[in-house]
Image (cartoon, rainbow, N blue to C red; front, side):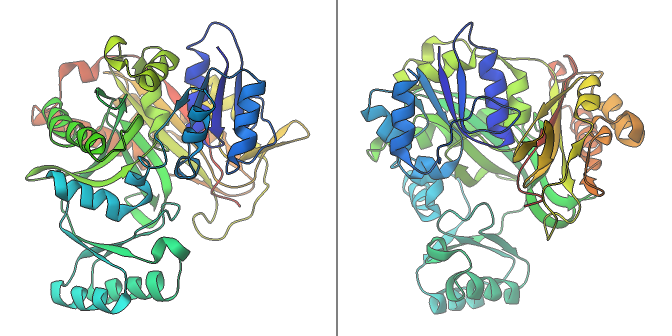
Amino acid sequence: MNILIIGSGGREHALCWKLADSIDDGYIYAIPGNPGMAESPDISINDNAPIVDFAKGAKIDLVVVGPEVPLMNGLVDDLTAAGIRAFGPTAAAAQIEGSKSFAKNLMKKYGIPTARYEVFTEAEPARVYIRETGAPTVIKADGLAAGKGVVVAMTEQEALDAIDRIMEDGSFGAAGSSVVIEEFMEGEEASLLAFTDGKVIRPMISAQDHKRAFDGDKGPNTGGMGTYAPAPVMTPEMTARAVEEILKPTIAAMAKEGCPYRGCLYAGLMITSEGPKVVEFNARFGDPETQVVLPLLDGNLAEIMCACCEGRLADVPIAWKDGAAVCVVLAAGGYPGKYEKGHEIHGIADAEDTGALVFHAGTAERKGKSSRTADACSASSAGGRTFPPPYARRTRRQKKFPLRACTIGKTSRIARCIGKLYTKKTAAYTLKRMMPQSFFRGSHIIVLLFTNKIII
């Protein structure tokens, strides 16, 4: 089987790694890829025609689209029209991520639990609404904004300032021509991804990411400093509720609206006192969630993806390994603010010697050496009863911590609290008898990710 992966991040590297383990022969290509992944044709991911031509010429059996922009640009539509099997939603179905107002209106129409909201296309009515409803509140640019279009405003002035930046100053261009203003929800966030063929939906292991730049949940938001799976808050009972109350109704709603959804559906959830509610939907695998979810998949990813494309997901076995996984990110100094680019990354082999899986994102190879052209470096670890305490010890004993072996230039940063957060939360939920015993069985893995948003 020949496979083509669209994208260049740690998510795509993880997909490449898992898919390589799923096929006996054939080739895996990546557009544009990175030094850690696969052969990389020099083609833009935003130019559909050359991608389709390459897929035809290379006799590609399966295309896996990683980022959201090619999905919104209709790449899956064009590949399908050319008779090429493509994993991911059509442009119409990808609106569930590409337009927050589309997603919110869909949820409202079909009774899918989410925060109360209003949509505004002009700034002044939005300001009036904020003054009437007060804070805290959440302001979201309607369109794609590279993960930066959401403002959690704790005061009325912060909310008004967000409206000015998004709608008046045009901080996000056309993506901010309309905004969604949401009720502030209290609870704990978690991510639940699922495979679907448009009718059947099969949930993956839940995950929980941490976006603050510094330890202790402090500092500015980033693209993600670490994540772990499963999320302790997503007990079997809570996961079942999310599937029945959110995932299944959403897939059914999309079919009724004439845009059946196939591929990976990502539900960003808030676990409230009333149960799970939707924070957002994404139309693809999460990053860095993919880096902890896929190491726990006990199944043939290529077979699962083909089944999603062909409407036969019910016939394919999907199982998950006992245990847990954690991913931490090594970022260049200064991230997410200003930082230098192009520094050499040291210590990859040393990190791998600890048992880590190393994933690249935004790296470039220069004279046989990996250097940063943009983002970060992350490590994922899967484990069971022996995992959380030893991992917590590794974060304290820095010399034994896998990412401690890695550096980007003279300065770099890792969130050493990720393992500790995981251990604390696991212990807390265990005391409440909310976690199954199987959660504490399994083996130990660690994954490192090098990404491209940090030193650009």
